[in-house]
Image: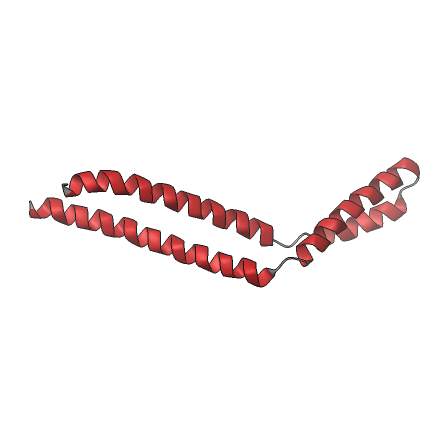
Length: 112
């Protein structure tokens, strides 16, 4: 198999793997992002200022946001940070492989 053929096969596979890992890392970081506590405080203030159905709706929204915050607090952060570290390491490995494939294929074509 020539270096050009191996590059044509490996680069798309490695690029696809890199995109998959980066997407996974982005999703994990979004999961770790802390909810906006200022927004929750604004909802609390607003809920007490309103009356009638608007007040009930505001309290429901506040309840949902506080539940999201409680869920965020109850996460196993050490597990998530370990996953984030592993994903970042895998991404660096794949980037290194891509660079290696590109340089070795270029070297193989140069030698010929």
